[in-house]
Image (cartoon, rainbow, N blue to C red; front, top):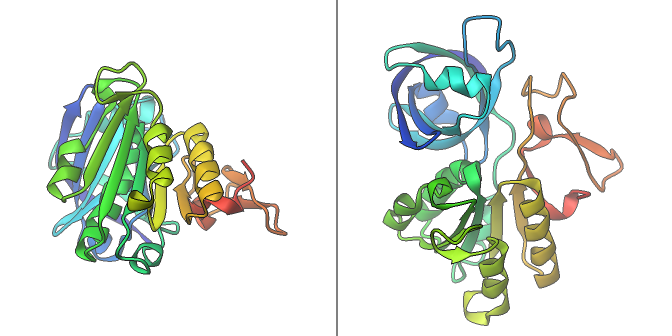
Length: 262
């Protein structure tokens, strides 16, 4: 992990309120692993003061890509950035996904469960699993059609993709955990591992289904991580170990689902 000054190569709105940013940095490209994140200073002004955390969406030859939703001052400032401008970035940070859970049973698929913008770090994971010849099933859930991201990109990787929306405007109507329950109930589609990222309620439900099915599960938690290195103590999560609490930024953001007290 180190602090870098990285040039923006591209910053394009890919859906209403969602942007994909390409950043040049051979260091971040060389050291980033699926599930890790970066802390970005979104403005040179004092407001917003704190950096914002973003899961690494992809690694490319020239650097990395971020996929983010405009939800406040920080991401709004980021959305105004132009190619050629420079960003102050700290990373890569945190602990990523354990790919060994998928490689130990190659004959079975790995299931990736994404809720909303939680799809961002899972695409990086999918590309790495693809390189290891792991079969991938991805379940993507969102509020409506406009909140479903990366479906085409996952299919280009050869992944089987199932879409769910709350309002039924695309794919199956209902929660993304419904097709997960179906997959876990069928012997032919029983996965080797589940990886998930999204809202806490979704992760809790995914964790419960994985536990009841005896399938290993890792979840990537989304928290306000101000420092990214465990100093500010702003992102504690209750765990079942003697320490009682861990920091999402330093000890995560990826955890074994069974370790968390939901």
